[in-house]
Image 1 (cartoon, rainbow, N blue to C red):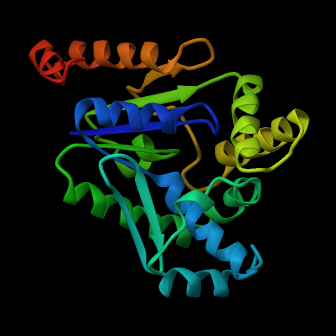
Image 2 (spheres, rainbow, N blue to C red):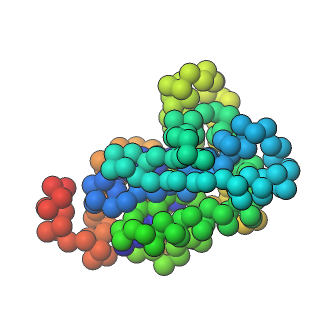
Length: 232
């Protein structure tokens, strides 16, 4: 079974996807982490966002190992663990300038589809999972949230990493990210057909999970017996 989760930046879709996958005993994978990993390496090598030749060479010479260890996702680039370096302000502000490029998106798509082939049941999270990567996913979920709430959550994440930023700057960055995601020519962020909408503005994770379980039951994707077996 494939569950595709798309949504806006900072809406909580990654946290929700991880919790959902763990509760159902599914594998969890995030497209955003793959784009962030490439962005991190590009920044480290000081590659200009407009230098497509260097970016193409980067992905052709990069070894990506991305897996879920049963507790958390681990991102290895060229055999180096960079998991804790993916969510700095610098990477967050630069990733949309890299991820919109067709050759980067195709590189990540191949990694995503290969991952799906290797896992029987997965939760895949990103921005074009249900619309492009897995349009025939068993369940498509779209996660959204008010921008002020998203900005406060993102600012808290930055502060934990030692980045001191203002709420206003985070809101501006999210607005720019939203615009780039929804207006890019290739695979823009959209709520695809038959998606189940989850608003995390006022719903906590447990409330959101409950809504998803109910929708899965309604669509006969899981049974009450399975939920009981999983102590859900």
